[in-house]
Length: 89
Image (cartoon, rainbow, N blue to C red):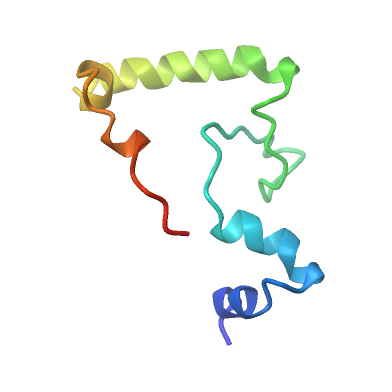
């Protein structure tokens, strides 16, 4: 049995619930992990105030990259398709 099948088949069991949600649920809008202390990316630090400067720097880098590559999400304010796609998870 694959790991995915094991998670799906046992999703209602408490010992699998903690692994099921991150593996199959909708991802948060922002994610930030400290890979030195959390190599498996289990603790999302994006909402922590102490990480705000890092989030701001990375957000600016992403915006510049999107503009340089002519990503329509950065250059066309009407392009919000991905913000409204129905989730089927």
